Structure formats: structure tokens, C-alpha cells
Image 1 (tube, rainbow, N blue to C red):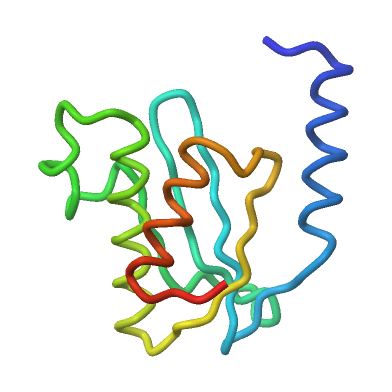
Image 2 (image 1 turned 90 degrees about the horizontal axis):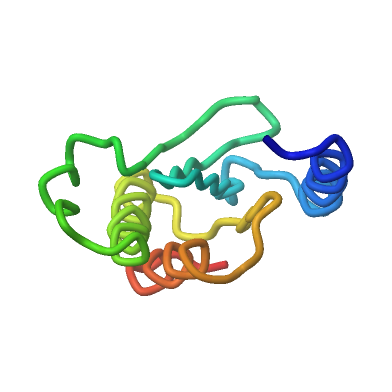
Length: 121
């Protein structure tokens, strides 16, 4: 488990990153969370306080595609899935929220895959 000092630093970074923007209906906030095993993405309308679309490694739509793949490749599949969900809702512009995570590795792979599938941010 992380020390209190480490948790405080992470919390401070998350507030700093999330304090810069809010999601709207036209341009929702694409929030990314990653754990050791999984990665999650959701599009959030902060004005109404609602989630528009979600995608994760636990989604049944991509469960069969990700068997035996590297974590970075799995993140790309989640990025494709969230992009297709948002495109079906008529949303093509989002604000990317990486939270407390660096824009590197799996977070970057998810963002690049979402961009390749038509999202603008």
C-alpha cells in the first residue's frame, strides 16, 4: 500500500489536472482510469452530472478480442470501443482527462486509438 505522502501527491495531481476543464453535452470529458489489470474510459457530462458512454476491459463486447494480448494493445481496443460509442451518440469532440496518470503507455495508447477512430481532442 502506498504511504500517506504518496497518496497526498497523487490526490494533488488529480485535482490539478481535473481543475482545468469541465465536460459539456457537446464536448464531454473523456476520463481514463487504469489499474494493474484493467483500464476504464468514460465520457462524462459535468453540467448534468451524467455519464454518456463507458468502455473497459471488462466490457463483454471486447472480452474475446483481448485474450492473450499485451496491456497496451488492450488499451487500444478500449479506445476504439469508446470512440464508436460516442460516434453513435453524435459526439465527435471530447476533452481528455488523464486524471492522476501520466500521458504515457496505456493511457497514450487509449487516446491514440480514440483519435484514430474519429474523436477530436
